[in-house]
Amino acid sequence: MGAALSLLAWPAIGGIGSILASCFSAAACSLACRSCNCNNSIATRVGYALIMLVNSLLAWVLLSDWASTQLEKVTHGYLKLNCEDASCYGTLGVQRVGFALALFHFILGALLIGVHDSRSKRAALQNGWWGPKVVVWIGLVIASFFIPTGFFMFYGNYIALMGASIFIFFGLILLVDFAHTWSETCIAKWEQSDTNKWQFILVGSTLIMYLGAIILTGIMYGYFANSGCGKNIFWITFNLILAVAVTTIGILPTVQEANPRSGLAQSSMVVIYCAYLVLSAVANEPDEGNNCNPLNKARGTRTTTVLMGAVFTFLAVAYSTSRAATQGGKAMINNGDYAPLNSDSAVPLVTSAPGGSSMRRSDALLAAVESGALPVSALDEDDDDDDDENYDVKDDEKNGCQYNYTFFHLVFALAAMYISMVLTNWNTFQQPESEEHLILIGQSWPAVWVKIVSSWICYGLYSFSLLAPVIFPDRFMDY
Image 1: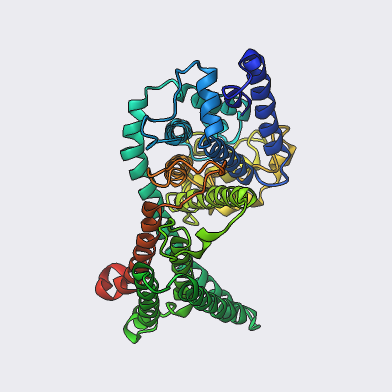
Image 2: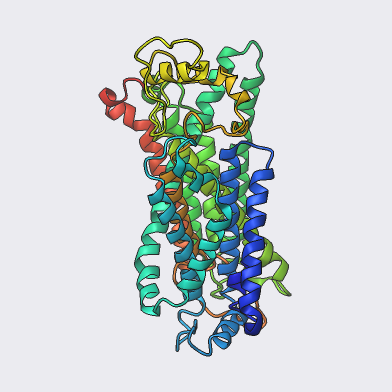
């Protein structure tokens, strides 16, 4: 961060300050990942999430008039973020920083294609080398400010827009999948348990989520559906109708026959999420003087509220991105119990009996797993590697990656595009009033419509997941 921030102020000491800050930030990131009392795969995800958080905060700061003014002053007018008509005020700085992070992840994803476990030499690019990676990321951020403005006009209007849309759609698919997984997991544990604990958890969580959706709907009708607010009334009512519809579909006898584990638990999670999306949409409507959004009447300084809202938004996106990248990436890995290892660093198969004690037990086990004679889990029972001086007890990917590295970085690149669009209010950013120094996130009509349409798509995806086994029974015989 030091190298990037040095562009904004103190040009006389920018060179020395940027180098020192880059070194300290890289060392701190590396130390944090190494000192984390968790497995390597988790520490790696935390590290990339922190980079995304810092990158997002930097992009948000660049929206302010102070940042753009300082940047223009430091570069003697070369880097000018304001358009003549103020229509793209601050957006170019956001798109530059977002592009740098997206490019950073695209490069890493390309370099990690075909890596299947941490024994591969290229795996160090994913789980280590934090110092050089931070330096490269900062270098890309700085370099992005010297790319012609015309490129980012095209990038923001087309590439980032498409990437953000793909990220939203992918997130909705994972939400629907999580709703089914949560319900099926609870039912499976309930059936295997001698107590009713999981029954109470399943029923209780379902009731709480439906109750939450009802409360959110009541709040929307009470505060955002005044006379003259036709769009709000339609959105809230239509969301309520869709909620009742998907709930009814989930308990239809035909659907229950095709998938006995479908029911109210999955529907409740989808319903409360969509209710939240609609509430978030109506609560972020721009002020048009029609009293449809009472939150616009808030007086006094909103610096603390805006700052906390921005930080929470970035934390939520960083966490959900990390979860989406790893959960989606797991589907790309063959997790069959007796599946042979797919590793470019694996030990060759043993074709003859070992002579003497030259072959360790771990080597023989690995060879057996590769041939499919033993399950992958057999490697976890081998403790002979404890004698190896290079053995890392926190390395949980020695025998196979926990997620697909390339897919992980692809999702993070799409998330960088999504954050850029959110910060620029989907390319409809407006200059704040003179008393405002921080930028509200998501308060524009395009941002409102993105949330409304996302809720409709979520209902559609969930309905399809319920009706697909009924419509295409041959394709879902083992559903």
